[in-house]
Image 1 (cartoon, rainbow, N blue to C red):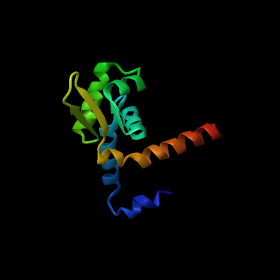
Image 2: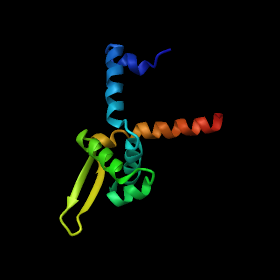
Image 3: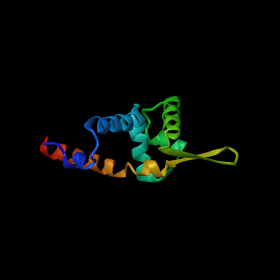
Image 4: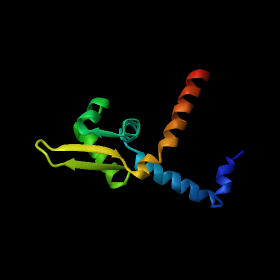
Length: 116
């Protein structure tokens, strides 16, 4: 049986799929979900903190993923005028709205651990 929340949207099913596809497009990429998860948990992080939090990602790849998230309005970047420059990253209001998705993923991961 389909989730009743989909029926409550009163839109064709294909529109729901299109919306999900758009959301996945924004978050696809090897490190984007981890970046968003860290920023969701920590609030504001410097680039060096993100590098330490995700050591498997190369500096180049991390920069590319952050730029993509910034272009899509998920992450905001603040450059502080000092030497050396200090750059902070945090979730935008749009990015913060993904919080319930991460909480649902945590619940799902725990369920899999218990039942698996």
